[in-house]
Image (tube, rainbow, N blue to C red; front, side, top):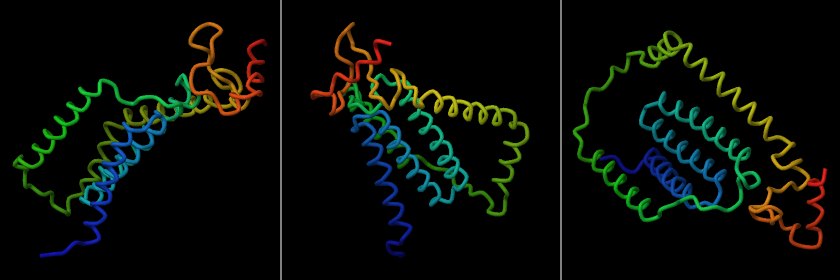
Length: 209
């Protein structure tokens, strides 16, 4: 019987990282941080897939999740009501329902993995499955994937341009702040440290232009 190997240790570390990062997605107070924590969780899962001799799925997961989470984070910076999407906010709503749904999903998926009669039909190691998949993606499905790639690239470029120095509420490097929740009220969101003292009034001048 083989002992505890380096592969076992790496599998355990990646599993722990995936679970902890997934938990932190709901425990953090920022949508941007939640996006990157979710990316970290998916990267750990991709590492597990690589250990399980599923290189295509593992690498595809890395590429897909990296692009998806980066686009999500950029859009958070663009469109969140608070600056850069970093102000504290609650990630979980309907706590009891959320906990119940999570426990039921965990138990159901665990039972499916442990109790299912999984098929035992290994693919011939000599079969070029990745090459066949590549021919499919770059053959009949070429137009679909190229269109999706160009669309994602255009979206990321547009998001970066729109989220640059001209911020949503004025120049982003001049202390621009969101409007108040009521007309003439205090700006929404958390106030910067230098806004709370005597120098707080200098940020209001751009509203008079």
